[in-house]
Each structure stands twice: as C-alpha cells, then as structure tokens.
Image 1: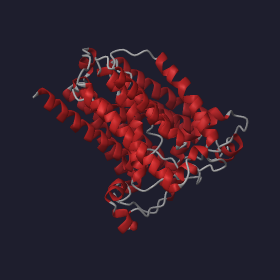
Image 2 (image 1 turned 90 degrees about the horizontal axis):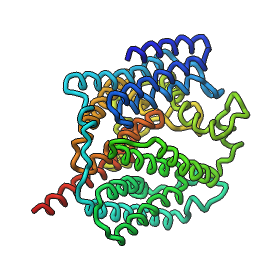
Image 3 (image 1 turned 90 degrees about the vertical axis):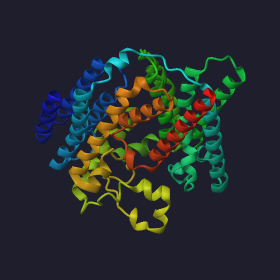
Image 4 (image 1 turned 180 degrees about the vertical axis):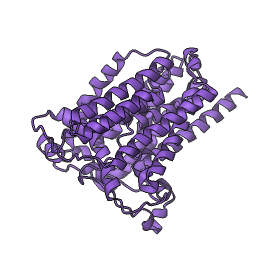
Length: 430
C-alpha cells in the first residue's frame, strides 16, 4: 500500500504539471507491483485483490496519459475518489487477512475438485435452450438479426425486448459451465460430449449473431477465469491462445457493426491521428471511462441517495414502468457515443465520496470471502461465482457492474443453479 500511495502522489503532481505520460507510468508501475505482490504471496493467478489492483489502478494509469483531445485535467475530487475506491477495497481485504488468515495455505494444498457432472450437463442444456428460444423470439418480433444488417452501427442496441433480452444474453454462462463439466466428467458418454460441444458453440454463436463484442468477450473471459480457478498451476501461454481466438472475432464483429476506422477515429479524437485503431479502440474503452467519472463529478447538481444504484430493483420488479421518476437520472459523459462508466460511477452519483468508500469496502469484504473459500468449495457454482467476480474486477473500469440489471440476473441464475446442483446431489446420495 505504501508503494501505491507514493506512486499515486507522484502521478497526481506530475499531472498537475502536465507531464501526462510520466503521470500514467507511475500508476502503471504501482498496478503491476500490487498484482505481483498478491500473486507471489498466494500463487493464485486470479487473486481477486490482485486483479482489482492491476486493472483498476492500471486503467487509471492509462487514462492519465491523456492520449485523446477528449481527456481533460481531472478535478481534485476525482483524484480523491479514484484513490478512495482502491484504498477501501485494499484496507478491508488486508484487515480481514490479518485477523482471520489469508487462505494462501489452502490454495497451496490444492485438492482437485470433483463432483456429479450430470446436473451441470442439465444446466448447460436448459440454459442454452432458454437463451436460444429468447433470441429467436427477439429476432421474429423485431424482424431482423443484427449480424445480417449493414450500415447500421447501433443495430445491437435496438435488438432488445424488455425482460426477454436478459434470458438471451444468459448464454454467456454456458462456456464456463462447459469448463466445469469437463473438469468433473469421468464417464465416456460420447453423445453427452457431442451435445455439450454443440450447446457451447450455440451459446457462442448467439453473441456473434447479436453483433455483441462485449458478450462474446465476456463469455470467453469468464470461461478462462473458471478454468484457471480450478487449476493448481496454469500455463500463461494458454492466455495467448485465447487472445489469438478472440481478436479475429472481435475485429469481424467490429466490421459487422459498421464501425470503420474513420468512424471510430472521429469519435475517439486521438492526439496522434496515425495511431493504429487496434491500439486506439481498447485504449479509449479503458481510459475514457475515468474521464466520464470526472465529467459526472464536475457536472452533478445533487446526489440521488441510492435511487440510481437501485436500478436493478426497479427494473426486475417492473416498478420503473409505473414510476419512471425512479430511473429518470441523466448520465454525464464527455461524448454521447462513449457511454461506458467505471464501477464506482453510481456510488458517487448516489452518495458522493462516502458512497465510493463504503461500496469499495463492501467489495473488499466479498472479495476476501470468495478468495479464502476458493479451495473449500464443493458446489461447482462457487467457482462460477468466483470467476464472475474476477471478471467484474478485471473490467472495473468499464461499467457500473453492481447497479446493472444484467449482472444481477447472472448472479440470480448462478444462485438458482447452485441450489439445483445441491438438491440433485442430495437426492443422488439418498
């Protein structure tokens, strides 16, 4: 933590003087140091605090480099809140580790997880069929499939039926279930093997047909995180292989969404106009979110006191249709096309810097519990939950995960599958 605080202060003062590259570099060094520290102590490649450190602090470092004309000097409150978001998380995790242990020993005494694969097979089949049925319903009612449209950059945004689309995108959980199934399956049933592979391919085809780059990448990253959580050792070269698979699909979907280079460069407004788009696009998808946070801090006239953060409740209960004022809050961004936000956007929107701190402490508490319980989990859905949290921390710079209805839908589905697995195991033992 001392290294982080020193690097943060250095970054802040360098930014004040306009040395943006050095300001960003200081935070990137801190992010790598923090991640390596947790990895060396735990041996866990996806240690939750390590992931949050690397991507939250590292994302801020990239943003501090200010490679786009859209990016401006941040307000002092923005700097304070971004530091507070990390400090609360780190402190709660650290205090609990010193009081109740780190869980590192249990990680080193790895016990291969095993269980009944049949309930997982049922989940793969049921979830894929539900997602496919919902997708077909949307395609029939809306009258199109986004992949086959041309010249419509926002086709996916319009491909949405209220309530139904949550089921459509639940397909992203299937590849992770497949990882669990192959880890647990000990039989030689060829028809199940073929069916699982087919269901997995269908689940990956749905985001492609929707032209949803994010859902496709989320599914792949979630499966990778689930696989890593099950292993005692992991060869990082596997991540290179995953990258080789993901990048071509990402580029194809970008073209399919009619997002050509000139269109994207016009939005991103990079200072160096000749920067390759494969660098510009991921940079802006990471960096601009911190600037959107700053935009909100400077423009917000008053706090919403929990109403904005409770959007999933208003959405899942249908209250938003009867009381539209519950969701009638403007979103402050520096450019209308760049609408992604950080994980802590709504926390500040609701309660200011106090909301950011309390929320970060709560996340640190949950991360600690999942980390120390990782090797004790007997229900395979626990590994899926751990992987989901890992992805949310990896993409902490991207959106307000825990005031996002889709996130809670995934968590609810995961909980239902955990109950189903527990009941199936109970009846098998009787």
